[in-house]
Length: 208
Figure 1 (tube, rainbow, N blue to C red):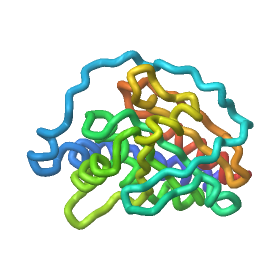
Figure 2 (figure 1 turned 180 degrees about the vertical axis):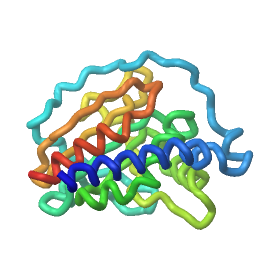
Figure 3 (figure 1 turned 30 degrees about the horizontal axis):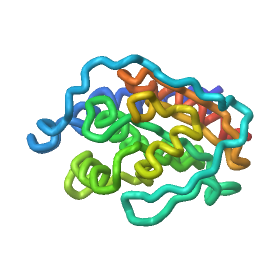
Figure 4 (figure 1 turned 120 degrees about the horizontal axis):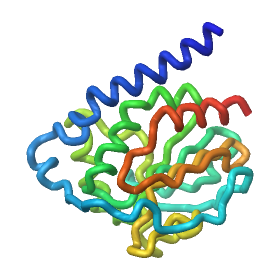
């Protein structure tokens, strides 16, 4: 029982910390950052239907990362649980809030033996510029940021989350060490996914 209480206290503390600091992290950077966020307005909540379901093998892929290395999903097989976070576009409001939130929640992923892979259809120079402005000067995004730019949206399409306007859905896939999908959240593109839902999904996959 005490372990259960401590678990929920931990999640609660992370959520409160994000509420208190999330806007500062995403928008409290130098004025040049906040003024560069493009106001996309309200979009159709979802615009695609994935054929993937919990229990399916996650489609493998290889994509270039901002750090310069190529990342392959299957390289983590047998080693880590994987969270794939598809976001629509760099320099947009919700995306510029969501990933910094994950950046300050690194411990949540570490304690559940999970790696996070962030994917957008933006090119590498755009992602490099965006992620460098996303954190404080002496900090960096801890998770790999991957470009699904060419062939355009190929991985998003594999996962069934490529929208008709050419960007991905705001989507989360949790994949266990055997490469099996254990959680899917195709979220309203206008809203940030709930961290507590992802925390529960990570705790469940870490029990497997």
